[in-house]
Image 1 (spheres, helix red, strand yellow):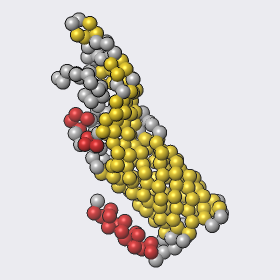
Image 2 (image 1 turned 30 degrees about the horizontal axis):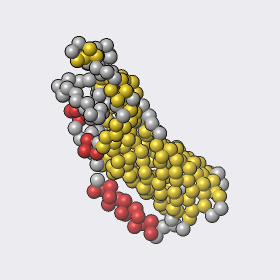
Image 3 (image 1 turned 90 degrees about the vertical axis):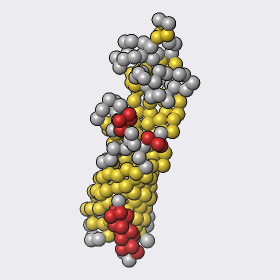
Image 4 (image 1 turned 30 degrees about the vertical axis):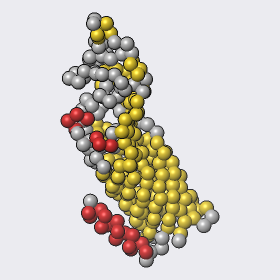
Length: 245
């Protein structure tokens, strides 16, 4: 991490004497959590707003370095029969020594302030296309789960043995709840990202359209024995504009 910060500072210092470009972008992110055990399986993609600002300075006619600061949504969602988190049901006392299952929707929302440093290769004449690739570090700014729906509670993952009281199934319970999970998620994440895009001169700058893959390489849970192991990942599409200083 120290090497990352030192490198970033050097890039910005060198950029003072270079021919700078500055720009901004906005678009959508399609994040999805990836896990390898029972607590982490079954996540699907969700949509989030993605955007940021960047500085670009050239090394050659076609190669440049581009530090960025982006708002990057991560997370995922599960819907259907799944294990019930202990805090997913408000006002209902649950047995603490058994696993319970139910049909409901569970959305995990993780928002990061992400700082990538990318190498960018640009080819073409007036209409140009490019590729970018490099590492990133990300700082957690929000972490919560939002559950919704209602249903019966079951003692098995197949949903065949309902939870009973005095021989009768308990009535359906509501799962409508939002829970802060910052204590369960590591504050710092890191990974790699790369993208492809096209750019075209408009006015005094260039408009561009880009698609990018963002991959986390760190298990984000602080308590892997109870919460499982997950890594972040997303696809982002953005449109933006940059101009020369």
